[in-house]
Length: 131
Image 1 (cartoon, helix red, strand yellow):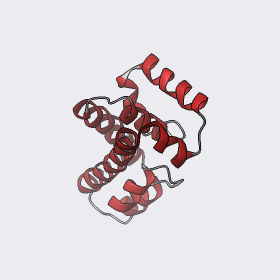
Image 2 (image 1 turned 180 degrees about the horizontal axis):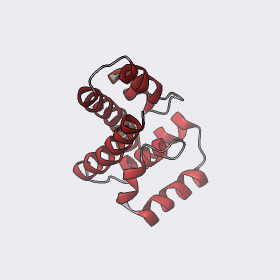
Image 3 (image 1 turned 135 degrees about the vertical axis):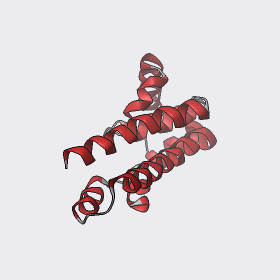
Image 4 (image 1 turned 90 degrees about the vertical axis):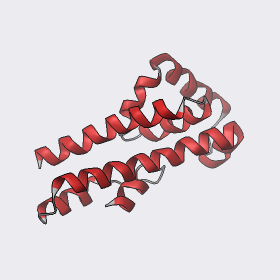
């Protein structure tokens, strides 16, 4: 579960929900699964944050093959919505860029971890309760 959740939070096109559901249906206890899934998913987002923070614009452009213009637009959107948008780091397509940009513009690591954890935990809790 941890590895699935970690990889799903990076820019790799993977999902961890199917693994979570399969384990829940196999009668694994919900609380440990939620903790492991959330921890792995937040760790994957932390990797993105670290890349943004330490590789900067040149690294992100090279790593993701994005233009200066698209990177600037993403940065502006993040600044418009603010750090609270990190609660949406779980959303497909926008979540990974959010965490990269947060590192690039140097959102405080404590805020980053707090907000990303809230959003990702809420998503896994909702999936688990609906299963």
